[in-house]
Image 1: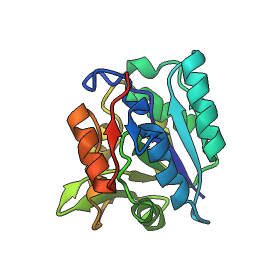
Image 2: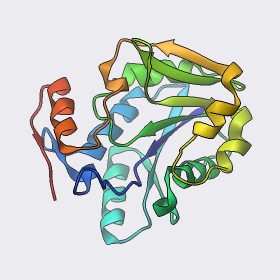
Image 3: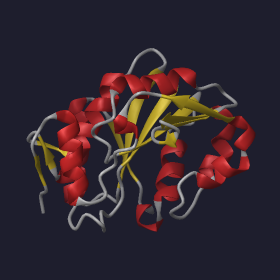
Image 4: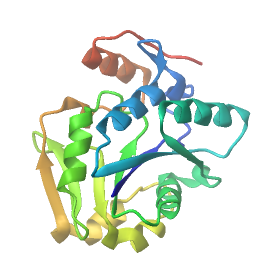
Length: 205
């Protein structure tokens, strides 16, 4: 079964506040994104594990809210060192997975059917990258063959080194979903995400 990994341990430096709590339709951004992933689950895409920061009181409360939705959570003590650490930590927690679907916690406009399509296209020795009009987006799927390289990731480059090392294994999957490219790094992008869903947006400090 393919494991969903939702990376949500960043510091939101460009946003100016913790964007995970910015409201879309009255619901925090991260929870809205997690709902998309949970709606995508089927016999191929199983559990969704959300990788959070080191566990202080606020982070534990966020984890509890995610668990109430049906997501699993884990705390990465080295998340401050970069996305590579968070990704490797998520893979470490799910050693029985047949592959991993790596997503970002700030992409609330991503359609569940797009997430599902990437999972269904993934093979044990493959890497699937979704595109919109030729532009690469998220989530990215990695087959089980890349477990060792994913576990070795460090720093803030995510899985870029794995993609560069296996260009011959890349499968480009064209999908009609603007949400593939719409991540929220700045408050103005929150409004774009809200427009994509037809709902009001409110940054929260």
